Image 1 (spheres, rainbow, N blue to C red):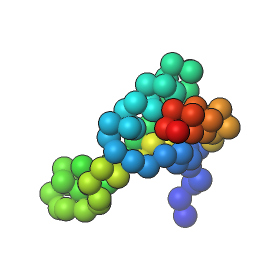
Image 2 (cartoon, rainbow, N blue to C red):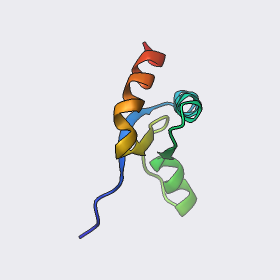
Image 3 (spheres, helix red, strand yellow):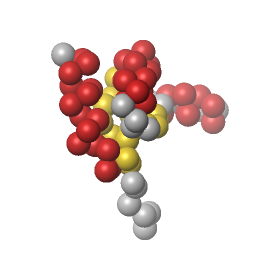
Image 4 (cartoon, helix red, strand yellow):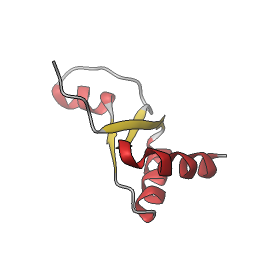
Length: 75
């Protein structure tokens, strides 16, 4: 059994949007990480994932602060 992650996905979208959101979150003192299954699959030598389907994660204790920043910036 895998341990529960301390991160929660808060957004999925294009690389440009994810990078923009990461900058906004960083400016607010919120660290984030990304996951790109397509790029990971290509680096491992096999195809997989969906292009422009980058996932953005923040620590669970930052979700309440991160969601309004994301919603406001994309509306």
